[in-house]
Image 1 (cartoon, rainbow, N blue to C red):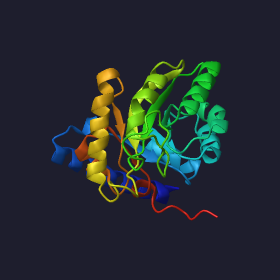
Image 2 (image 1 turned 90 degrees about the vertical axis):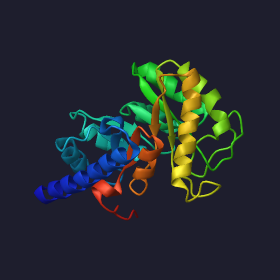
Image 3 (image 1 turned 180 degrees about the horizontal axis):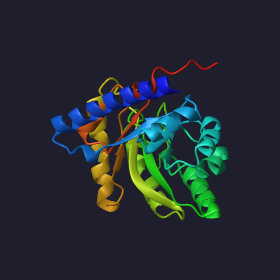
Image 4 (image 1 turned 90 degrees about the horizontal axis):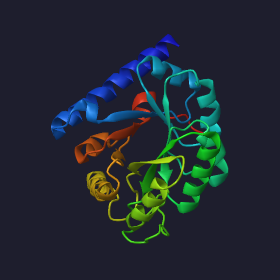
Length: 244
């Protein structure tokens, strides 16, 4: 356990240096960027160590892993973010622990989240996941990306739906750098496009100012573009164990 704590502390310090350097290069203050550590596939014991090291935001992408982990760490002062594609049959479980769902991409999911949040008396933050590989149009969110998400043309309608839904709070936008389409391999351009979309969204929803973008390999580009939150997994926790 002591060795693992030292390993995580060193990795965390390195990521912290990267974020600080990226902020300096972009002329931003370090406190403008929040680190979310993606703990998927790693045990609750790692989450406890991270908490001891000062981490306050953790993320998961599979409910079957996240639910027992969140329960085992319920005594810790943590904000849990759900970042994976979310099926409506998992909503009841996810609303039980997630403070923020970053992968909202369709009306049916908004309805399910609102119903459950109201039932249990919680307020759940929601980010609209934007698919930059789904084309610009598709108003109403018909087209979705390879990794989930709504096309840019569907953001406004979905945002209005979230903003008007009981139990939900519209937080802003999230994206994953696309593997296909015009932004494939162009992380900086992708994140800058997300920032433009965030500016558009804030004209009608001024409080929806969260922009979640960037991971271990491209957090610098996300900070340069203006992201408020970066989601870092392997750079903190190490290479993920193979599943199966």
